Length: 600
Image (cartoon, rainbow, N blue to C red; front, side):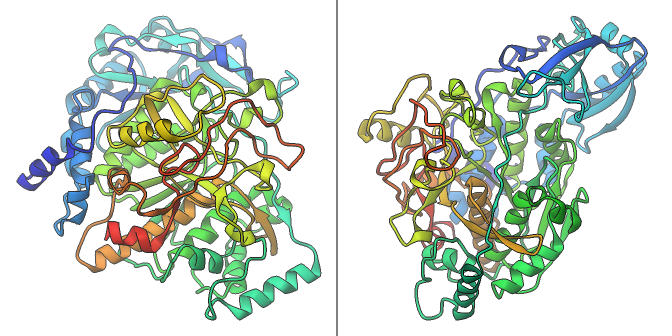
């Protein structure tokens, strides 16, 4: 680190303190969370000669001692953000801080000596993949017995449409690797549970379609956009004071996608023509999931991806956009961790509209994700994550009231990302409130408190103020000493999205995240024009501003799951909105003008 970075590190102590939860000890290993999973069933024991690939997480340096977190705090506090000279680290500098070449070499030597074939490793050596027969793995790793696991549907039947996986209920890190390995992946980790699909609503009424066309033709030059019940680029610009949509080719933005989602280049063009936007294409397609035919065969194949692409690019135009598809649906977060650790020039702003039930995510994934998020933050990268669409209960309760309770959503709970909730109201011309399915919002903004990550110091006073002033939450079973989420919010109801050549309404915190990401891409563009670096990890500055970057949302409760009014599941647990930060909409909906004054 240079002298400027060391000085900023001292300042970071005022805004940052360790936020990691418990960790497994060296040499321990991990056990499968089978006691909370009813969607995977143990099948036949694997044959000795069956091949299986594992990924070894290397014990990176300066993680457990808090050094990396201190560096992140140093480059992310408000004083650092205001400085003209950028203090963010390069890919190589982060590697010099965290890489453990001795451990990487020792693991590779050990694996090869025991008959495993190293198939690949990340450039800085954090993650090593190796393939071997099951008999070799069981001999190499204490307490392992590999079995086939089958996915079972809600009726308890094995689903033939989904391939089985090979896993073990537990493993121990062998003595020869105990000081070198943090975790072993594709061993005990089960694929994340998938939410039920929510079909977008197709607009078919000819009069409604003509009304929308007239609104677009009239534009917003004469004043505030007329509320029609739909969210459009013009409405977002008008309500959230987005005075310019011109980004910059010197910055970058990306969308994380998975679960079989495609984006349609044809629909992107249709959307841009419909709303009189500049004709632009996705700059980089990682994973090859661009398809017009996939959208035509089933709108749900493209609803999420089309939404993300169309609105991020509408908010921050000109900015190069990456569509980053993770093709392994069984391990999307693991694959993301490995991918970002390999990218020497990652996009500066990233939006993730996917989440899993935190209590069903293994510690190996929770810990490794937070490590890679910290590393990205030190490089000036911002990560936005949608907070979920089912209040405090999470998506498994949509069709099962017995699954209600406080079930936080990962990775929104990670302290090193910015979690984004949803609001409703502006699209109807009414007061902006927390999005709630029982108030006609289709979804309920997710929020609550992590079961794993401790509260970061930048957040503790905000949480304390909330519980001192807000109406007491319904139910028990959350830890207010842990990381609270979301951090901010954005309108999340009835977005008009082009799918298969038609207009559909889509709702969710997945609408909010790419819009907020686009806003911060615009801010990055202005910062670059002013000779400054990117905003990077924004949470310390966001919380030090105490809500002055957002429109405060003081009405709402997140006790219901996504669904139509009258048919949605509402639970006996939930939080109430309040003045200041709350676990529904964070500090409130992001206003471009207010945010610019703090982040430029």
